[in-house]
Amino acid sequence: MARNIEIKARLPEGLNEVRSRSAALAAEPPTVLLQTDTFFNIPKGRLKLREFADGCAELIYYERPDSEGPKASSYVRSPCPSSSSMHEALTGALGVRGVVKKRRELFITEQTRIHLDEVEGLGTYLELEVVMRDDQTDAEGRAIANQLLKALGIQQDWLISGAYIDLLEAGAEE
Image 1 (cartoon, rainbow, N blue to C red):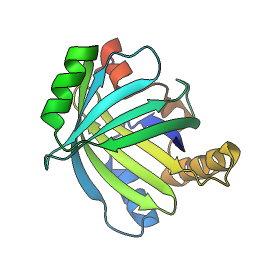
Image 2 (image 1 turned 120 degrees about the vertical axis):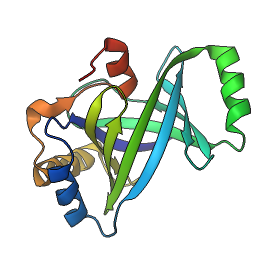
Image 3 (image 1 turned 90 degrees about the vertical axis):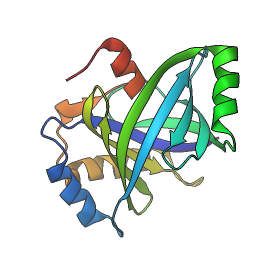
Image 4 (image 1 turned 30 degrees about the vertical axis):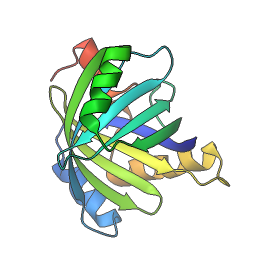
């Protein structure tokens, strides 16, 4: 499985300051993505069907600990040529756990994806994904994530554990 070091933070003051700092670090302007993630009931890890506004979709399975700060995540992404039939099959077989809808701005800096997310029902968030090379240790990835947190001005008490689906289930609406 592919792996990354991931970190999430609530942005209580909105996106503007973090957006300008992200843009300064990125080599190109951001890509804006509208995503709907349908999570399915599984006994281990998380399984979601991610549908994009342009009709494309991908099935994503991932495992990672639910802890604040940088954490290792292993994942598999598989393109879905027919999201509607995949959605129907997974819903019938596993049942839907919940749905997360978001507007995402994606900035790329070196090997890290900076996501600025406006999540329906939750608010604004930052997500960093340091895409790990095979020859890198998790400690190296955590160091990169921590450097970016500092450069972006993210405060320690903004960090969250878990996934957006967990926050929605817990009723963490702003």
